[in-house]
Image (tube, rainbow, N blue to C red; front, side, top):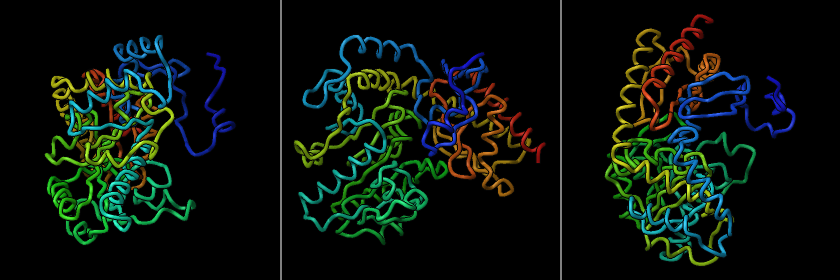
Length: 404
């Protein structure tokens, strides 16, 4: 097949901040993807938990096509029907009373952190400005969000970074207690730490965070960019923990592949974002909101959410069978269809070797750090695709071990 562009073109024309796979996908349907040469891949990566309903879901395609024939963009000088319908649906399905739309998880978190500081400033004064976050968290790639994130590798070379940020040990209540004071305006937590290796929070940690925030008049912010939108078997993970935040950020799966982010909060907190205090040119775009409304409508169906756990059980059983043969995983963790396979000591630092071996077997997987394989497939992935993907992963692991 003759291709007008190839993978080699990436190295010539793109900024070199990514190192993409050696093939170029050109078509997707469900949990299968085809590259320029017609090779078929099983997708266990889900666009990093973005393609929550798989590739080219017919109802999402229809929603986009219908809106594309009506209205594409207005700017926030006006509102639009898809944005209002989506916001109303999110308010109906969550704790939230107010919604702010943007384009990505990083932007949603940027808005959340700004709102937390503005709310504290408005209600308690400028000295109440500290944001407490967790070591090895991930909240986006803006300078503010990487600074809150607590991973030095993402801020190295970009200083000076914003101040007023403290970091604690994830799942360590005593560490959080020691950091809390009346200067804290917010505590920011991922219910499941994604980029650092798929680490679920303990219920005790989240409950303690809620209690400490209440005691110190601080806001509790949950970053559910990766854990939200059905990924754990609930619409949002906080609903399984029984701990309600003051602000929640959402992106990735909420658009099913169409770029959109959202910040959800209460009426009380939202009041600090008055006219002109924050904005987004594309936030609330009619195309994005029309698609996201269909995504939220489909994923909030109890039958679909129940199916997430059934698929998890099938996938984990297969992973355990692979591990029984090859002994490469020391732990399989996560919730729902956000799964981390932590490599044994002998393979520490070699997660990308597994990713490359999987690519050769026409399987798309992810890594989370240097030593964890990450799986985040479609929430509606077919059983036969799960089984085929597991067979290809088995072959990939065998290839890697055979190669030494």
